[in-house]
Image 1 (cartoon, rainbow, N blue to C red):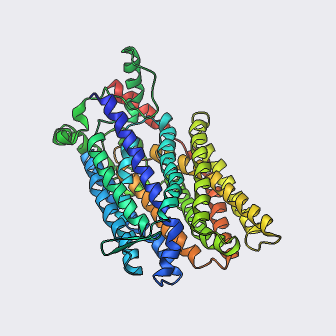
Image 2 (image 1 turned 135 degrees about the vertical axis):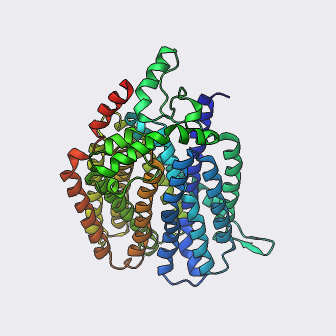
Image 3 (image 1 turned 45 degrees about the vertical axis):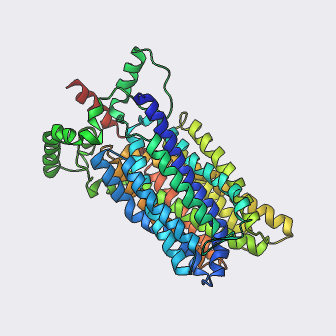
Length: 487
């Protein structure tokens, strides 16, 4: 099997990983509220349960990313992290007490930290102009999981039997179901995942020319170049790579110590820099804007997700079936949105896509403030106002999510993408912790909850406008590429 086939199967397996994360979220979220009530947990435990998963992902993401940057491998990292998913979901299935359920989400969240390694690998395996489309496809896989998940709930809710000493019902069955799926995925990863040698964006154009000269097929979106020498990135030859680049790394380190880190950022992206970027990299204006966008959009999204289940129960008497169908329809909309953004990213700059997404999200928040905080009219009008608000919120999500991830990968060093993506995902993890905690205590005070969300959206919109010219790939990289290749 050549690298071309291995790469295809590897990207397919990555899609499965993200799909399972979506399925897990979709089968647990509609039932965790009632599950906690049965375990006699106070209302704030809903926010704790949803935030616990993100907390450990926040802490482990940069560590997994640093691991992948140093070894240039992701397979072993994913296999290791999935064991935490398996253990966490089995603990959720046991469900002996509210504290065990909370711990189960903490353990499962460790597995989510491997996502930083995957995004780092994808960044090194794609050219800048195609990166947004690749990220959109991967994110769409997670949304496909969110779409398929409610379908599994249709039969999981019918479970009512005992498995040894454990009770299997509609509240505990999602745990054992996801435990089995993650076990099956381990075998898929062992059989279909390879640490194929990725390409860097600097060499992308050259590789495409080589492929065209050799008469290969047209470019495939999720494919990288197979022409790069295998020893450059393979884990088994990592010592060779480290030895061959040690003098080069020392030169870059020496230069960075005596000069402005901001001025030498572009050079450090082209040459092989340290495995851990300096803190100055994350304090640059464009990076701060993108990390802020990551935080605010995920904060608002998870806050609304936390609010939705109690809201539908209060106003529309939705049960597990109604919530599952609602999440299924939401998944369809978001998947279509990601595919639209995938197409749009080939026509429009990432920063323009980000701006459109922020405008849509702000409009959605204003709508919810006006029509959901104090609903008036009959059941039909209230339901219509709710549907429009959710539709607008989900419509803006793909625009913001894809554009800020793609931009972040372009304005940070490629050599340390695993660690940088870990930092980005940690910022997002912090948002997914605080979002449910904020919304969980304000389900009866929607004006305060939505007012804060709108204020945050307006703040990041202003930041984006003021920094619009800097939200692009540094031009100096292209100059450095030319000089580097010429030398």
